[in-house]
Length: 594
Image 1 (cartoon, rainbow, N blue to C red):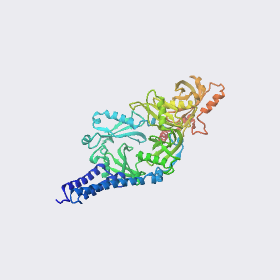
Image 2 (cartoon, helix red, strand yellow):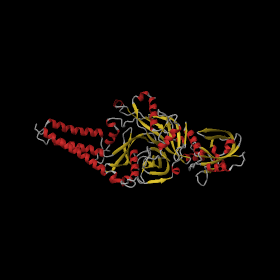
Image 3 (spheres, rainbow, N blue to C red):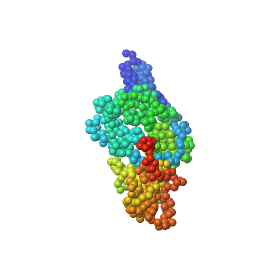
Image 4 (cartoon, helix red, strand yellow):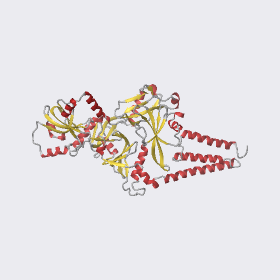
């Protein structure tokens, strides 16, 4: 064998080539140099392949390896330098306008007219942490199954209009995969508003569910490797999420993306929807993605785009931080009026704890809505809720913004050291000292309403509110004092409603007795909340003092000129209802459901 071609040189060259194909199969880089990780991978291996060729240039082993080592070193350094230069060129220093505008046009709207009043029966208080505990418990009920699989990552989504968290059963390691190559048997679905509603779904339409393609599988069943093998070699892939269609069929939804400034400024371009059982892959644009797909825009993309929007408001050279804003700590996924959004508070640069507004970003289209509203940051509201139960040591979860009778409010749960929900809390966004807590959501809401009204505030009811008037005799009446606030609960003969009113509504409440005839007005927002807004004891005819008259005028929370409450004559409605045929009633009920 010649001096130039030796066994050692051949072995090194072969190892370089073999390692290239092995690592390419293992790492699965994008087959495009438009992504930094792929450029580094292919660039370094190009340098190594050139170096392997250089092995055969020298007359002997010593010079050959010297040429190869020098070539490899120069090539690797060149790759690193090019990546560094491209990163600088693609940064905000040269692309501040592009980065600022990436989030798109932001529409400003009023909070109370756009944030739908929340149905207290549908408050999504179960987070991923609690879902994991509930799911593990459910999986543990089947010892044989629990020893074969693990619980995958939970995804929050809407399925047939119901907010749930879903997670696949995944392989518990290589040997378990070898025993179940056909796939794991099902998934777990948990209601986002009911800890008792936990289901292990193992079949659909009478056929067993077998999740064959997943990230915990190996070889050709590995999810990313399978997608690449289906021809998607040049696509940037991120955010592999497990989702169900409206029939409960399992899929993987993967976001495709591209870089818009060399190696930076990532932008989602669409989705690849993978049948979790058959492996069938379908590629969609953002607008064409199936309607049941809730999340297309990865949360990390949106967080960065919000950051760029706030930072580059006046370009890169804004050393005085003029008009700069930033997102508050944390981000949550919320559902409003049928749409799915990322929610975060906005605050000015600095160290204050106040928000200047809120931002909702559509998780599919990236359409952004800004609500200008000065208030407390989420972390401040969490501390305020914790302060109410500081003797118990409970910790608050990241809050959700909700609309309570037209009042911007945070909702949070209070957990013990084991991560189990023990209490619930509502915190006023504009005044986080106004807090209501309770062992149930309804109790927390009542406590919050009491605290809010007793502070001399009034509710600004939403479009969904209806004002009912009623006259009758008091059947029962009692009061309860919580945190210095007195709330009266009473019933009226012939009505199956428990009415609740704060003592500040009128002094007549304090001397009203069973059998007294009263005339009241109340608002029902169809969210388990019946709020008494007017109370008149017809047996009490004493003249009110000026102070009491002024106080009642202040507390009066329904004035036709500045609220959207619709007066309703309940007796006339009943008369009209009785006139309808059974077919007309059924049709009307169906329309109301929609």
